[in-house]
Image 1 (tube, protein in one colour):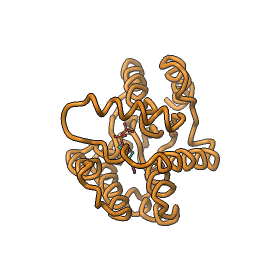
Image 2: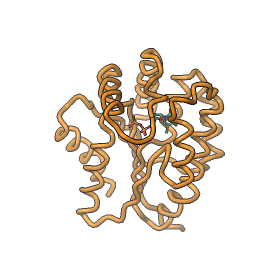
Image 3: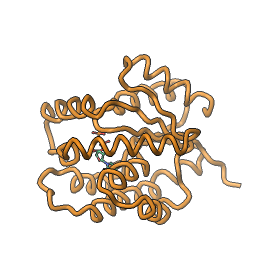
Image 4: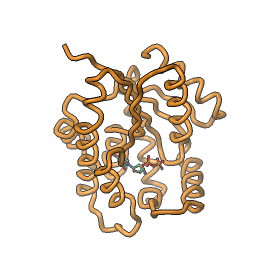
Length: 213
Ligand code: TYD
């Protein structure tokens, strides 16, 4: 039997604090001597980063919902084949900033594409690869959005605001989508209140991850 590593993903609406919390978890895992692969969706691999540019460029207003969904999955298929599957086969810990739950929440609930379609594409893009544990950082969408927009306004480099620029109702649906996913799979998807202090959120995340590593 192939030795299998451990796969944890981070999920949440825009501005939920994922980046900070992922960094803290990665530091802790590496300090413990774990062999960790850090990746992200959309992005991760060099090819994925090129797809990310198309997805997040605010000039691409005309991108259709199905084209958007397929690009997110194209990015993920590349990530699974090039990075994630080999890392898990080598027994490494894989930490991903977002995975298919994002597509279920954003394209499924947010855009109104059916969950059945998203899951079917997941099967094609990722085959049997699914996180063992998913940390969902739950935050009121208005608080998250104002954080995300403030961060983007102060950022140099490419414009990555296309998703954040969606209407508030879109982000509200995304959050409802996440809450429904977490209710349906409470064992895999662990919900953490992201409105707490950075330290409290980090401690709650570690309590979830530690038993697995
Ligand atoms: P990300 O880089 O994680 O941005 P943030 O730090 O603001 O959360 O994700 C980029 C955007 O892409 C984000 O708005 C969520 C969206 N997204 C989808 O709509 N579908 C997906 O499948 C993924 C992975 C992300």
